[in-house]
Every structure is written in structure tokens, then in C-alpha cells.
Amino acid sequence: MENRNLLNERFNRDLAICNYSPNTVSIYQLHLKNFFNYFLEKEISEISTEELKDYMHWQLQIKKSSSSYVNGSLACIKFLYNRTLGIAHNFGKFPRPKLPKKLPVILSQQEVRKLIESTENLKHKAILMLLYTSGLRISEFLNLKVTDIDSSRMQIRVRGGKGQKDRYTLLSRVCLNLLRDYWRAYRPKVYLIEGMKAGHPYSENSVRKIIDKGVKKAGIKKHIKIHSMRHSFATHLLENGLDIVHIKNLLGHTSLKTTMIYLHLRQTPELKGKHPLDTIFKDKQK
Image (cartoon, rainbow, N blue to C red; front, side, top):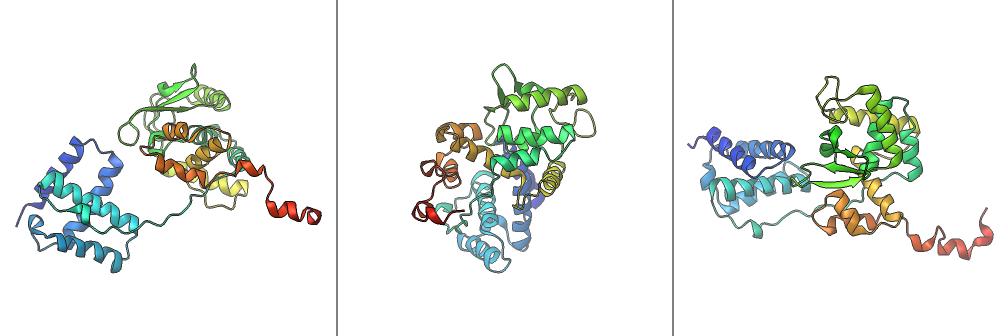
């Protein structure tokens, strides 16, 4: 029987060579563990294409895993065979489960203000405002350094974003003023938003708790997550007239197709708040 610990080490080595993010590595490790457990009595190098398809089918039909989870599992297995083992399976011909196309939940601009004003804690207010003004992913946000704030150009530098790509995003004047107050009060050493220990980053779980508490206190009934701040940022920029290609670059999307979802979230500017039915029955409006 092959040494799976050695295979796991080689798999991790190849992920590191390809510079995959820590979050992706963690997810791939979970998928690989489940894959090894399913084929416990089978040599990994001898698993056929049909057996791999059976595994995908088992995840969907028996284990009741989501389409997103199964697609992630397939990406992990593809990496294992193509990169680590050098075995050719025709993954391009694999049937892939269709992902449900759900529109993300966003805040209105008024709700963003309510959320930010829901707390008097200076650090918490800075976190909420910074998430919205930048549109950053949570991993990018937690890794921000003090030196990434470029006040002269009103920009925020994003180092090593998704795909290990650097970029710049927006910084608002209101947020900059608040960040200056925050810096004077907390004097962060390395990371812009630090945890209890100086020089250590803030935790994602703590950010989640701040948002949950703020949403409840602000009386917002929507199911808001950390990523909702990013979705709201992009949608409001689109509503305010910024072109979608510029928004794509600010968000760090590789494909414009990903950014196009915000066209479905924006308020239609051509209507200017007037629906045809309201015009037809204008005498009925109160």
C-alpha cells in the first residue's frame, strides 16, 4: 500500500510551489482527507476515471454535499492527479454539478450608515467603515498593514490578493479621518487592525461578531454577512455611475463575468425611482 503521509507531503509541497493561499490549502486538505477515507482500501494511483465519477456521485446523492462543495472537491482531486501524481484523467469531460445562481444580499446606502453608526467603539466603527470603503475580501482586510493606507492618493494598497495579485482600491475621506483617530488611540504596530496582542492580526470571527451585533442594533432585518459589505460597495459604485470595468479592477476580479452580477443588484437608473405602474395609477398613490 502506498505511503499516504508521503503523498500528502508531496501534495502540500506542490500547493506551496503554486503559491496557493492558506485558505485554499486548508480547504484542499479537508477534501483530500475525505477522498483518502473514501478510497481507504484502494491505491490512489490506480483509481479509474469511472471510480472518480462514482465518488462525485456519492458526494452529491448520498452525502448530500452542496454543488459548490463537490466542485471544490473535484478541483482538489484534479490538482492531486495532474500536478502531484502526473496521472492523466480527462477532467474536462467530467460532469460538473450546476451551481445555484443566487443573488447576494446587499445593504442600501442608508443601511450602511445605520450599521456604522450602531457602535460607539472606535475600533469597531473603523472596521465597519473600512470594509465598506474598500470592498476588500476578509482575508485581504485582515492582512492590511498600516503602510498600505496611501492618504496622498486616497487609495488602499492590497498586497497578495486572490491569485497573489496586488492592486489598489478606494479610500474615502470620511474613512481616512476616522482611521487617523483610530491610529492615535490604538497605535497599531504592524497590521492596520490588530487583535489583543500587538503585532498580531484581528480575527475573522471577531469581525463577524461586530457585524452581527451591529446589524441587530441597527434594526436591519436582512441576512448580512462580512462579504455583504463588499457586495454593497460594488453595487453602490455602479449606481453612482462608475463603469463596471473599473469596479472589476477595484474588486480584484479576474473575469468581468464575475463582476456582471452587480448589474442585477443595482437600482435601474433609467427609471429614476418611477415604475410604469405607479405612473398609470398615479391618482391612487398616497
